Image (cartoon, rainbow, N blue to C red):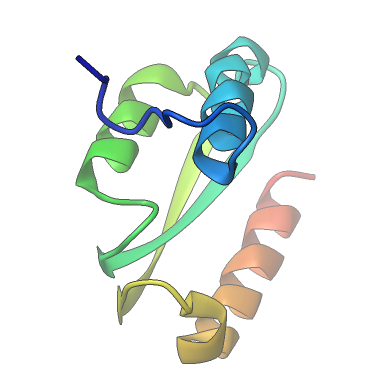
Amino acid sequence: MQKKGISKNKGDFADELNRYSAGLPTLNENVPYLIIHSKPGMIVNKEALKYAKENFKNVSFLNVGMGKHYLTEDHPKAIAEGISNWIISNK
């Protein structure tokens, strides 16, 4: 049985994303993360947020409001301000 979120096709986007994301927790003590998300979200859904909260020690979250996929088009000002504030707070 295929595990949810794991691609059947080696090398496709989902496969690559899964391989790279598997290594992120090993970096999390030294690297600050900013996770930009919305409700209901698409890629960064409830499960992804829960995982990040439980596994990343140095993580911040920016909720930009309602949205699914094109958050940069739907919330450009909120994202720009959030990233700017996050950078300043992590200097």
